[in-house]
Length: 166
Image (cartoon, rainbow, N blue to C red; front, side):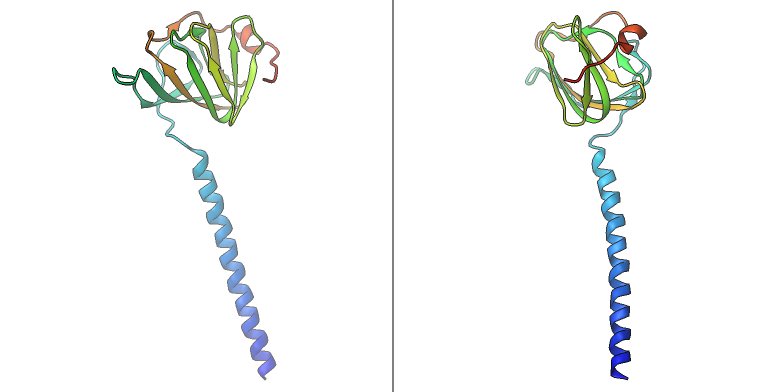
């Protein structure tokens, strides 16, 4: 009788522990999913400086004390900026997805989560999502020497050129 009781208690314990472990895995997965979204997606960009659909969440606007703006930009697949320059330079932090970055006259680079790009002042460039994957970046822009200068749209031919790894 005692052996049956011990076996029963053991099975109840194993069952309870496995249910708790399964619940813990589910919670862990939900938490991991929530961690992948660092900043809000923001509002849809409606100006003509982008091709395709992109969203912007301004995290910090530049001011007289700190001439640096910081924005979280989410590009849907195929979306991209126009060619442009930043008189004070820009830094891009890739936080999710797969994107592209290209300076005029240079090969296109593939960007993935964790990549960092330093755009020198007054260098013509563009950036955006890959053809079939969204891309999220934090853009840190120095505005001390002026705001971005927007140029012509990136053509489909330029966008589809063979890319290289960085």
